[in-house]
Length: 89
Image 1: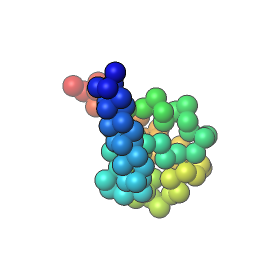
Image 2: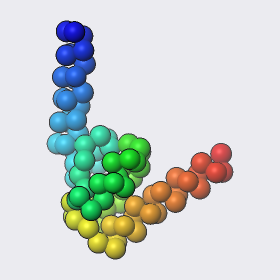
Image 3: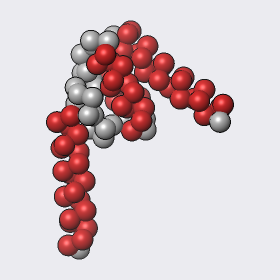
Image 4: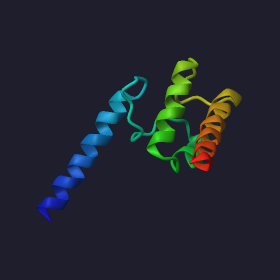
């Protein structure tokens, strides 16, 4: 039980550390940063996809918790790019 508690605490620390990285190039794709509009889309993404979306929004100067057609454009772009990469492997 103690091992489980230690693992749970470590996971919580990792999530908290990633929340502190939101809005930086150090974000690792663990913490949520998006508005509720995208919760069904982004919570099911891989960490890699979240980092890519996060960085595209950040580099485009978009609010990370905002929503717009441009936000959706970058989500779609990331998903399409990764799907094409997997097909080319």
